[in-house]
Image 1 (cartoon, rainbow, N blue to C red):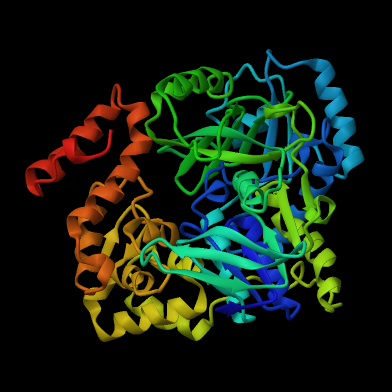
Image 2: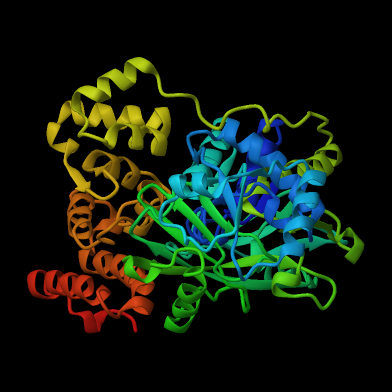
Length: 534
């Protein structure tokens, strides 16, 4: 039996933040995640580092938290943040009164709203509609959620934290009204074991209600699905928001060479990440108020995530607060169990701090939180960078350093120096080398090509896996690991995950790309599209 002080359920941003905070204070903790790290809500959003301006009118406390955490994450996670700004635009469809009230609310929350002359706006963002009537600059930014999550986990590991992926909690063990531990099962080995603990924290996002039910507790979690569209173009230099009450399809967030449009808000169940062609067309119609030529741009894919909203009342969807709650289930008669729900990726560190401030004294630990000042990763050693520059392909060096950090980057450089063929670029869209794939594939947390994708961005670019999937499968198959033996399964699982986001946009010019992919895998590799899930 494993034993620790705290068990955390959920490998998203909230769970990651709690794991890092506890471990930095010297508390022994184990995080349990039923899938891969970051495979749920925390990787299924538009990647916006909120300034808080979007919530300033309706949710003052959430707005203040966002602007404060925005500043902190830009410092401690600078390798994960693209330091651009957010521009709020007023179109003819947006209300004059809302604009004035919004400006006052932002000022009250401490969020800067610098007005931009329209002539200057169109110089900065030439693709914007010329019908825009006003614009304001706010301190929003884009953030790579995958990269930040893994850097948080890597940092926590350095302080002694442990993580169990593909391990699902199937029971909460209690005795005389107090938590004693959890019972878990491994997805791949089917091994069932117990983990003893003094405290249990559920950070399972929209699944918090299901986790609470394992202890016969009720939580009023109201999952809200948001669908998003990824364009194969950088439509804007900065984040673009509509200046109105938060609604569907009113945020464009640039990421590298792509742009994400989001989002919708539909009440659903936590496992629902489906999208439909109707949603896509509706979002495009709304988005044309911002970019009139929107339908001329190629769509890469669509995806959806489920927000972990919490409300004791009748509110749902956009009427539910974006603030978070930490529920001590001692109120329900069970000591040693806390559920954390709500909030946003931007505020995950603060959520973790407040939870740890509550729990640590109960464990006899009175250390202060330092997660707001200690960087997630160190800057890459200059001498290591020089070594890498001699052997890395163009453009891949800085991207790999940012993605993998010093420790893995050293492993990648060593691999390339021993065998120059390891510098081969497997994924041209995201500049992923064979050496990087092999280093990630050899880690104990990796069980599929999709796991590698979340660590490297393999297959997330223009071709959506068309050209890099067969290269990646070939590379990992040579490693001879148990999970790499069934190459047909590797192909199908990864391509199906990519195709899931392509199906809702299989019309017009998109069909050309689909036919190319189908031709490669059916004609060249004899992988029939009828074998894929429908």
